[in-house]
Image (tube, rainbow, N blue to C red; front, side, top):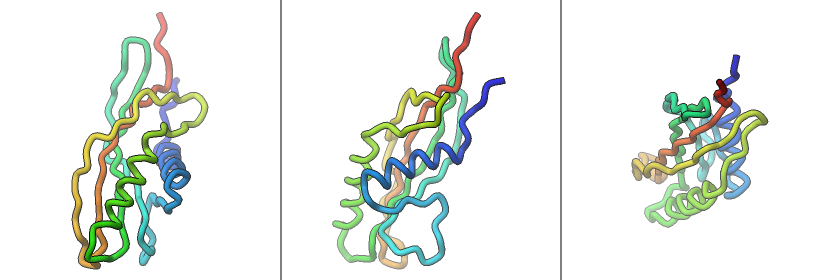
Length: 135
């Protein structure tokens, strides 16, 4: 039986890439009263996307960026630029899994929270192979 990628391994790989390349904390669950700026990651879906030769799944991931409270948008745009630059490098997966595609789909929202923190939400797809088909 083929082993599919564990959700925590995927989130960990994304967090590591973001933190290494931005120097800013990335959470999978934001602690109460966590100081901004920070990023957090959530998996919002998974679908089969096998090819002719490989078993694959595509994971839909939302990456949130929260800037410090401000009346200016400079902070959030800085976080956006850092995230986009960080994610130009592929994530590193555990042995036995291959990253086929890492794609930014969209920036879904850019909102101002009640706390005056700016919040941007990005959608990414990660297509991951976990085995080869053979006849």
